[in-house]
Amino acid sequence: MKYVPSLDKNFSPLILKLRAFNEKVAKASEKSHLTICLERHLGYNYIYEIDIFKDGTGHDEENYDIVERIIKSLIWVVGGYKIYIKGSHYIFTQTYNDYLVNGNRAFDSDFMANVYENSFEVIETENIPAAKEEKIILNSSLDGCRIGFDAGGSDRKVSAVINGEVVYSEETVWFPKITEDPMYHYQGILESMKTAASKMPRVDAIGVSSAGIYVNNRIMVASLFLKVNKENFDKHVKNMYIDVAKEFGDVPLVVANDGDVTALAGAMDLKDNQVLGIAMGTSEATGYVDEKGNLKGWLNELAFVPVDANKDSMVDEWSGDYGCGVKYFSQDSVIKLAEYGGFKFEEGLSPAEKLKVIQKLNADGDKLANEIYENIGIYLGYTLAYYAHFYKIKYVLLLGRVTSGRGGETILEVAKKVLHDEFPEYADVNILMPDEKNRRVGQSIAAASLPKLG
Image (cartoon, rainbow, N blue to C red; front, side, top):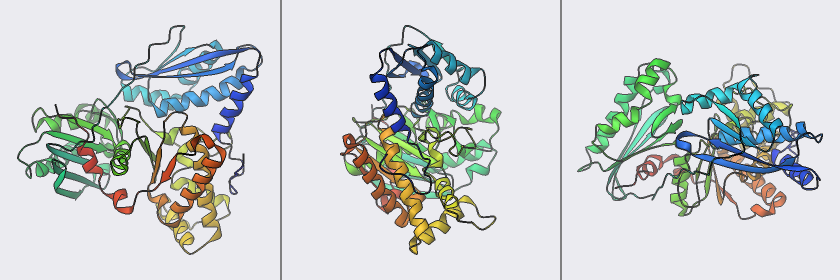
């Protein structure tokens, strides 16, 4: 390991642990081939294969130590509620126990069962299902008369687009996260879309960008509806975008996670594909556009993906797991590293206020503040190599308030150096930050391009 974070010397990049494991197994005389298949709605799946030590040869715990992290990663990168395991009875048993018996991974299994409206399963099999890949085909086309809607937590944005020209756009302040009545959300969304529709001769398609998890245009998990109780969520929220779209006739509708739409906006701006967008803010939000310019229907919830193999690293309060991305690529990381460096924040400051304190110090040339961003850059360089284990990456777009100002430039510079020095196979990966305009604008316009006209 060439680069060690000065404020977090126990950081152990998961990608290096995986690399060392693979090298050790390659030299072993007794090994097995492990296949993991993660299945989600409509039978779409992701198949992952790795060589491991043969069961019962003294390496069972060593096998599971790395495979457990991979399974956890797959669940949050791709999404799914059914895990098939072939090639190791020990790994099957341990996985089954962790996800369905002892509660070690109850957060993950319960979350996915809710998202996909199916009981979570772990299955040992000799017959792995055939690969079935979801493709949400995007032409990034703006032909016809389109509505693009971007649902934010503090404002909602809408654009009316006619053959690629934005003829109208507006932002409206609203308070979805503190409102219990789902009709408030419904009427707000409908009002914005009706305003956009009134600026066009007709509506040919509707595209929506919104924080949360969406399956077949249905809202499965979304912070916008934080205060809506479960009964009303199931009854009025899950099909809300579908119901709103019906007000405009039988027009194509595509609802996508805002991280994916951010990546799409970046791909449109770059006029290229294979774009991974990472927004570092309250949490770590991500999205991905593949080599054909399509979305894959994956969750891309990298905040819950483990990146640090150090079992004594900070635990995420929500999932109860250690070493997850949220503690490395969000304002939590800035605060954590500042405290590791001995910095004392004033009592009563919110996380966002603490971030601003460090950003101000950094702007004034403070050594510790700069060191914090250098450390995040090291985190990112090693982690991008792990992400590239699952994604084909040509560009990485860095966004979010953690990347504002000098700190963002430092993260960018250090991450490039670490990635390219330690992993020459990724020398062509281009890490960049969009300009301020593209960071803030264009989401609703990119959303308008989501549906394909029949």
